[in-house]
Amino acid sequence: MIDWNQELSPIVQSLKPSGIRAFFDIVATRKDCISLGVGEPDFVTPQIVVDHAIQALRDGYTHYTGNSGLLSLRREIAKYLDKEYGLSYNPEKEILITVGVSQGVDLAFRALLSSGEGVLYGEPCYVSYDPMVRLAGGCPQKIDTTAETNFSLTANAIRKKIESANEKSKILFLNYPSNPTGASITESELNKIASLVKEKNLIVFSDEIYGEISYEQKHIPFATLPGMKERTLLLGGFSKAFAMTGWRIGYACGPEHLIKAMTKIHQYSMLCAPTISQIAAEVALKYATAERDKMVDEYRMRRNLIVKGFNGMGLTCFMPQGAFYVFPDIQKTRLNSMEFAQKLLEAENVAVVPGTAFGDSGEGFIRCSYATGKREIEEALKKIAAFVKKLASG
Image (cartoon, one colour):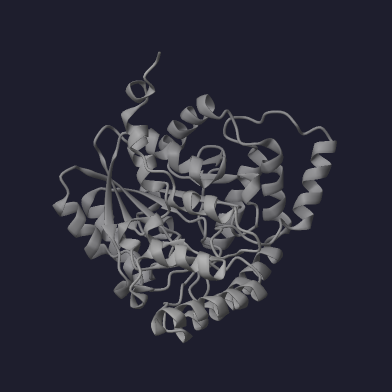
């Protein structure tokens, strides 16, 4: 008889299950539940993308591509980044097509980290960062962000963490606009961070999957800052801005040596991203940017609606600069994040995600996605307001 507790990797055994998945296993059992929890667009993939993909299947595009991905797609990504942000990448040497941004993050950590080297990142954050660092043998170095700075990472906070850490800090991992808070980073703060990166000789991994979903401030890729392109890996994709989550397609752009190392791992672990998804992504960049912009306009309207709703019921909520999440403060209810989410679900059949699913610094907050219809948002806000009122009276 095999004792699997003795045989399984200690690192894997130490990982906690995703707090988002655990909560939504419960939600899935409830009928007519209004969900503000799912982190994916409610829009379907633009029709022109779907039509081209279907035709490509009929035309026999069902075989492997090269490890790096279709050269035509990599060229289109290079054109897109140049047009949008003035960023120049060699499509043959500096771009890798990945199975979503998550695979790109995994490849990058495994390509660069040696045992015990530190990765700096802000928290609350997406649930996979800490586990991916650990699985690659690195040491997570989380930096708590707070409501006072609208959960935006600052150069001073990064410096304090580096100087207090027991392990060498090698990588600074950025995610802006952020999941779960919608926070971004101002241009002046980005420049301060860039100066610190140069001073401390850090390498930057920048997850900018929500970059196109920015509102008042146009997104500024970290690689566009002076001297940063040579030490930055830009991670992007199609899931959010083009409503293509199920296609599982992303890209990594960066220095040739790092891309080459990531490709080496990619060829053994994944071979290539799905061919049909690569074709769809190329079509999206060529023909669907107008649809992208319409979706962003709709998200902006929903953001304004949901922020006004939470502030109106007395749950302080800052205005996100991007993505499609709000992160309201529920501390006045005297419930912790998990209690609030569970009791709200039981009382009003509305699902939100406890802030603690994104790290301990998310305590006292909940994440709500406004990637759902206006009518559902309005109904959810009414139900949450009634729940909060009952708590206050009772």
